[in-house]
Length: 447
Image (tube, rainbow, N blue to C red; front, side, top):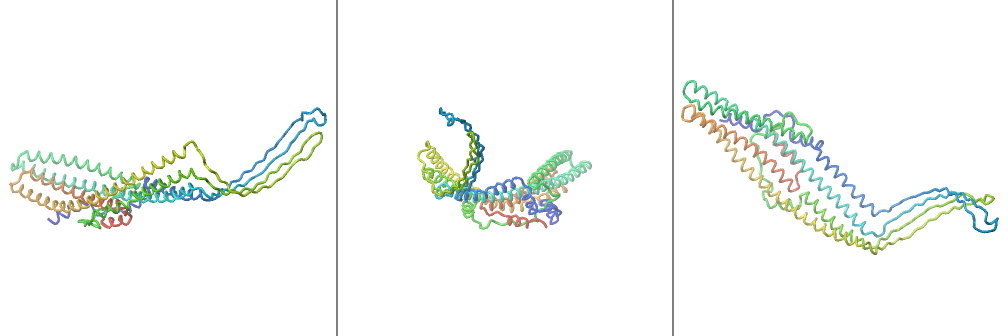
């Protein structure tokens, strides 16, 4: 009996040889996954919001320069032949100007600077969520490959067992101790098992390609779970605490809280359109002209001037066609929307935490029950085989027991993997999922 259970456990959790474990697959995904790379680039772009917002408080310096060649030909409209003669003028004018503008009071710029700091915090929150999503996607894909492998091995074991039962039915029919019905029943189950094996092979290949989409490669083998791995209850083992943590610690909640503050500052920013702006303006420049006048004789002409100014410029908006008031009403409506979105995000985080917590607790109960059911199913199969040999059970009883054992083995594998993923989802809902949790799950794999 112990040897049979050992064989079943090996079939359930895979062979000991492997090429990569969960931690290695996760690190491959960090370097390869396009979705995570997109999130990282978005985060990098989000960091630039701060210097952009700060720029509105710093001075602006601009410079301009010009050079113009002028030719003027004119005649004075008077009767005197001397004074009314034709005059030509050819000269060049050029100059430059440097302007410095330092905002002294621009309330909208102060609010925009506050928005930029919140935008950076929002980008950080979204990137933190992207990291957690990557862990979940990698873990889900990894365990789906292991589950597909377990299903394939289970199908192969069931096919082998049915094949043995088919051969036994044929021998018993030949010696006259069983009817042809037993052979037909065994043949039917064998054909079904063959079909299930082909489907399991196809499913395994699909899951392997899904893992390749995230990591860029699929190792020849993946590290399986240890036999009879111990799954622990959530800590703290209290759903209410997990829900409260999710409502305050989820990265999505943090991002939406930042969005609400940004919307609130946008209201103040738009209302600043009614306020005056005060700027310190300083200029320095040079203008010059060189050339001459021709009126029978060349008369040199030119000038050179340097001008520097320092002053305060005040602009007072009076009426802009109602645009400022319209943008104010728009900002208020968008702030209400952001507040509603925050409420929805908190409720969703709480729901996700409850679902994940119940997924863990119910999964632990299922694993415990299915492990006992696996032992019972194996005992039932052994009993039916013995009964068939002594003539108190028929062939269909043995086939049914084999099918029940295969179903129990499959359900147990799925329950174990689903429970592990639910534990990670619970951590993600609370905003605390990290690479340390990947290492903790990785410690449950065969080394």
